[in-house]
Structure formats: structure tokens, C-alpha cells
Length: 357
Image (tube, rainbow, N blue to C red; front, side, top):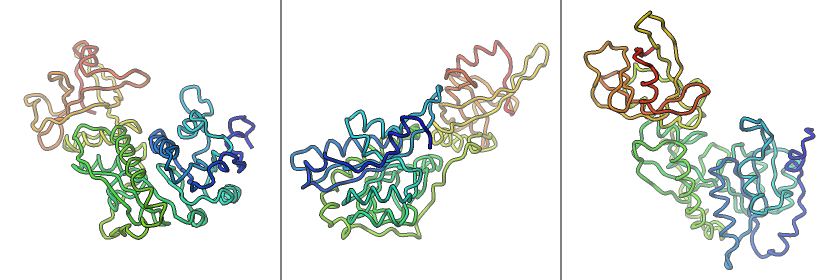
């Protein structure tokens, strides 16, 4: 076992919970989540649980184990664990199993006798042994309009597809991936410039509101009666994104590339290679650019140049694409450098040409 004090702290499954005894009339609820967006849901649950007429209390939190993050590679708790500690939540009631099917973890979870479990981007598969523990079931906040975009990357895949409408669903968890009956959902229009991290944050904010609104019906059991089974024939999948997908190829139309930039913003980002040509000596230098912000020009505004030439138009690097379209790149990042504007990059070229690789 790792000897790190922080790992010992979070891997201790201590079910001693004197705080639960003071609120024994409230139904114990267990929250499962890991990344920063999940803290929005946990915050809403903490706040709602302190209301005078609250029917529940957060009895425990389940999250991913501490990991090495940031440049210092320090072992850090998940954002959800850190947020819970900052709110004064007992570290003894923050569980960090490697897998949700571990016997020790399930034993400690059963000892808490949770009535309900809530998941929001937890990041682990929940086995049947887990799902059988809470009598009211497990409810998941999923950032899509189920049965559309079931899977690990619903927001990213929806933006990649260029959808005009998306939403957030509140659904019961079953063994099949994101296939449980839907309790409620909320729809919203998608702006054609919004990026995945911003949309994800917004959807989880709306999802937390939806959860708090529906909790009374979930806790009294009526939600199970009104929940609508999903139509599996309409299901689409949102598989996990891989780093290999981050490359941009300009033999596609500009809108396809623009949507990919929005979808992959944050992680893994989108990359492209260009050739910088010195006009004086013909020297060629290949650069890898991380593409940060783009927009679409519906017509090719670089006519008259070679098909591989990247030009500077107004405030953007103009990349000719398929279908006589142009992808205008507004911000880029060189490896190990800060994000800069297209104008700053172009000025730094000092007259050298840029070509698509």
C-alpha cells in the first residue's frame, strides 16, 4: 500500500458517523462524482440538505482515488474530495475505491444503509452488487438528451457532430450503459461558438437544479413510477475520446474542423502541423500548433493563393479547406508556450510563408 498520508487518509473506510445520528430522521444519500463539474452537484446537495424541511442528508461521498496532477506531480485528492473537505465534510466518509465493486468498499457502503445514491461524472462502472444496495436506486445526471449520446463523452461528441440542441437528463442507473428510465430532462439550444468545458459546466449546473427539484419524488418513490423507459432504437453512443483524434486535417470542410476544435477544447485539444518557409534561403521548418479558437468562413477568401498557403486575413490565420470553405484560426499555442493571438503569431514570422503540411 502506498505510504502517502494523503492516500491513507482517503483509502480509510471508516463508517463511524456520529454526524448521522443527529439527523436520523433524514434519509441517508451517497454522492458519487470526481471532476470539477461534479462539485456543482455536490454543492447543491449540501445546500439543500441544510434546509429546515430537508428530507435527506449526504451520508458519504465516493470519488476517484488521489492522483498526481499539475506540474509538481503532487498526489492530490479529486476535485470532489477537495471540495468536500473544504466544506468541512468528514474525511472518514470520503471513499476512494479503485473499483466500485471492491468487497471492503461495498461492505462499508452497506453499513451506512443509504436510501439513494446520486452519480455525476463519477468515472467508474457500477456493478450490480453496488446497484442492489440503495432501496431507492441510483440516479445519474447525464449531460445529454437520453437516449442520445450514451457513454463517456456526450458533450464532446454532440459538439463534434454540430448539434443545434442538447440538454441534460436525470435517469435511473441500470447495468446497461446510460440506459435506465428517464425521470426528467431539460433541453437547450447550442451556440455555435461554445466550447465543451463551458457547455459541460452549464449542463451540470442545470442538472443539479433538475436533481433538487425532482428529489422529493425520488425519495418518496413516485419517480420510479413516472420515469419513462428509453427507446433503445434511438440510442446513439458517445465513446471516450483518444489523444490520437486531436489532429486536424484540412481535406475536410471548415465547419467539421471548427466543431472538432470546440468539442476537444480543454482535453485533448486539437493540433495541426504547418510548414514555415524562409523565402530567402528556402529553409523549411515544421511547426506543431495547438488550435485554440476558430470560426468558419463559408467561402474561400484566399483565392488567388496556392492551395496549401495559409494567409492572414483581418485577425485570423486562414486555412483553405474542402468545399471552398476556410477555417479561420484566432488563437494558437506552440509547444511549451502560452496561448497567443493569430496576429501575434503572424507578426513573429517576419515575412516567412506558412503552408499546410
